[in-house]
Image 1 (cartoon, one colour):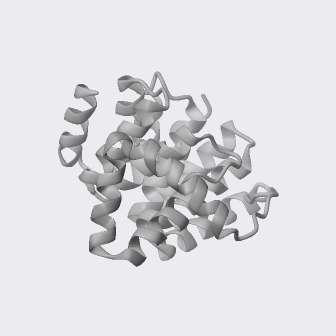
Image 2 (image 1 turned 90 degrees about the vertical axis):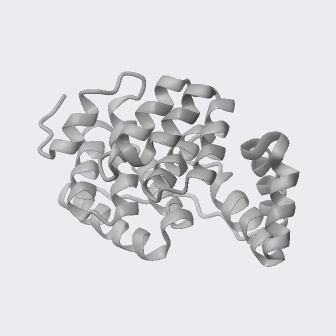
Length: 219
């Protein structure tokens, strides 16, 4: 392992066993981006780029975070990532530009929504509709169809990892449980999910995530 200067990054990377080094660094970057911790984000991006040359993978999980932390977090996160990449004379981006296709997004978003919520999907969708029909449509089209089911650079499981970290940092435990369930359905072990939460602990105290650890133990 190369020299890791940030203590939080070093602590996680020396602790994980199921996650590989680059994935752990990537998820720490998501946690830092969500929390607005620029110093940690810079260290995580530097670490990721030291161990992995899949720049589009970094790009995809950083832009995905707007679903959970908003556009300001992603704008500032990408500024940091581009600054680190520029110093290395590389470019963090995606070579793929997907056209905006609402019908496609609704189709694949509905499928992914059912993957995340399983047998409760129809119930959750009814609740969303009762809260706001517009919100229901936006979640299926934008959240699940355009972003979480986006088939580029990262796997569906890696997208779930990114969602888990962002939701854990935001302490949105109801939604966090759903995405933990989805990650388990996609093949993640309890040990792996615990390590994903460990990446979020770089910015959130462990006790704030105790409900998530308890949920993982019941999966």
